[in-house]
Structure formats: C-alpha cells, structure tokens
Image (cartoon, one colour):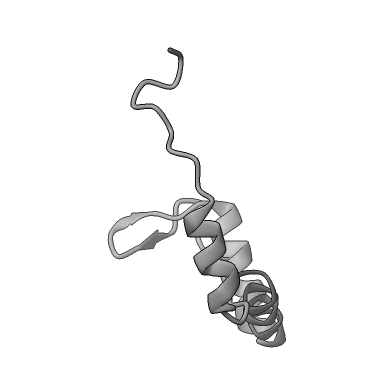
Length: 67
C-alpha cells in the first residue's frame, strides 16, 4: 500500500485524486459519459438567426455596475 503522501511529478496527491484516478482507470466508460454530457450542454448546434437577434437585442452594461 502506498504512503498517504504519494507524489505525482514530485508533488502531493490527495486521497481524493488517487481515488478518482483509480476509478477512471477501472471505469473508462465514465469518461465517455462525461463527454456525452458535455456535448449535450455545451456543444449545441448554432442557430445563426437566434445568435444575430441576441446580439442585436443586447443591452449595454454600465462600466460600474452599482451606479
């Protein structure tokens, strides 16, 4: 069993990081699931007309928000 202060690249590696590294090594499908979730939320198809409308309707924000 490695010491609690196992080093990675000469630095401290927490118990949580070691757990996650081991989990991802043993469950590669978890990363595929993460990537799918990322795509659903962040990589949506671009609708140019909606984007142009949002840019046109944007209200300028004052430089100092509390004026």
